Amino acid sequence: MTLKCRSGMSISILNYYRKMKFLNVSIGCLLLTAFVSCDDDVTTVGNSLVTDSSEIRVETDFTLTGGSVKNEEIQSRNTNQLLGRFDIDEFGALSSDFLTQFLSVNTIDFSGLYQPETMKMRLLMFMRSGDFTGDSIVPMGFKIYPLIGKLKPNELGEVENIASYYDENNCWSPQTEVYSANAMHSDSLSALSYRTIDVTLPQEFTEKFYNEYTNSPTTFQSPASFSEFFPGIYVKNSYGSGRVINISESRVVLSYKRKTTYTNRVGEVRDTILNINNAVMGVTPEVISYNNLNLEISPSLQKRVDAGDAMIIAPAGYDARIQFPTPQILENYNANAGDFSVINSLSLSIPVESIENQFGIQPPQNVLLVLSNKKKEFFKKSELADNTSSFLASYDSTEKCYTFSGLRDYILAMLEKDDELTVDDYTFTITPINLVTEDTSSSYGSGEAVITGVNPYVGTPVMCGLDVANAKIKFIYSKQVINN
Image 1 (cartoon, rainbow, N blue to C red):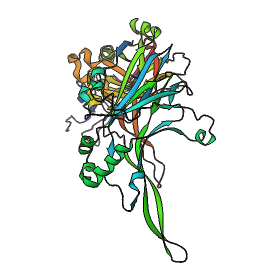
Image 2: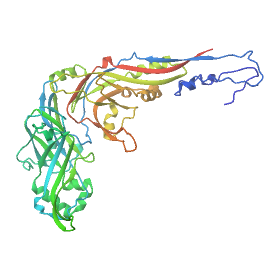
Image 3: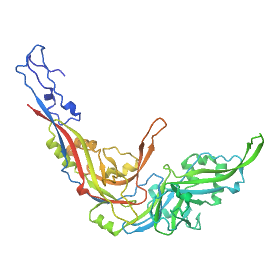
Image 4: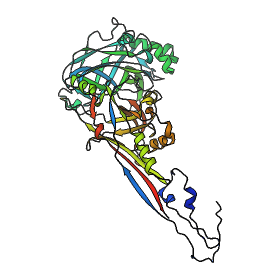
């Protein structure tokens, strides 16, 4: 830029910016003032000096409103499976069983197979120690049914549709499989970080699996072809009440014997029999796993929902829906920011009310704040929080709140919309989630857990109330005051 002037005069380049609405630049740039002289030998007689100062404004006089909304059914691509039923006065009646596909390994080493008739297949379901709600000792039971058709996500969710996926007369466990969540005074089990439910599958299916691999190995080369051969299983509650467990991993292990040889210390070749245990199938995020959840919340919770309280109840319960005061924030900014301003930050902190109950049901550890009209798309496309239309927060058990600190980009985007703002632009849903993380640590240095996925919440029950009336919204921006 070229500035022309007469000898002996100085001007401020700040005049160049006077008609700009706002500048998204650093404060240091806004404080820059330059004076230009046409000749080196001029004096300061007659110069006009422009002075300026900066002001940081912290605005907090905003009000949040909200209530509860039924959490719509969204298929979750994760490996968590809930099993069991209970009725807790403060929470409600919850039951869950599940249908799931499996992903198979591509290759299995059957070389030297010995006594194939002794092969066995076992379903192992793993629960982390303490990852349940209810009574750990009460005996409960389930039955396993093979699915009779491939799972279709769009057709799941209704009782009559689930009933069409299995045959009540074709049960893999005619005798109810009984389990508990307690180590039952076993020191070796108590020391483990997980509990295992171990079920032997029918020998007929074991032989079918072996014959298919021997005669048609291509069946095992893709999830689609394998699900045609084996659609999966339905694990159905059949006995007892008082506990719901969270199964974090399910796998099928094939046990068989293999004959081989070895050379002993004196060089003699001897025959030996090896006992092989191979995990040949597993539940992974790549396959469909559907939790058949049914929740009837307690009268005390329903009363609060009906009264308009903002509640989070999961799984299969209620989300909180809020209206963020975006129009008021923009009105405040436009009225007070002036010609030179920078938006520094925008945050939202919502107090959380824990609900007392006999089984220690807590608020959800992680929640997602997402524009309500984008929630379904967010999960359907397996998106990550972008800090423009979706945000993450973890429960602060010390301060008892959720804090969303990164709303600056959101309000900048809304400032661009100006008069085109609609109610959809500031109506948000707060919903519990499961985070998928990846550990980046290596032998070269310390790493950190990186979030690689955000899934709808599937896990043991959680609940809380959100005190939206006492939510704290902090809006900070800087403005420049020019004094002539």
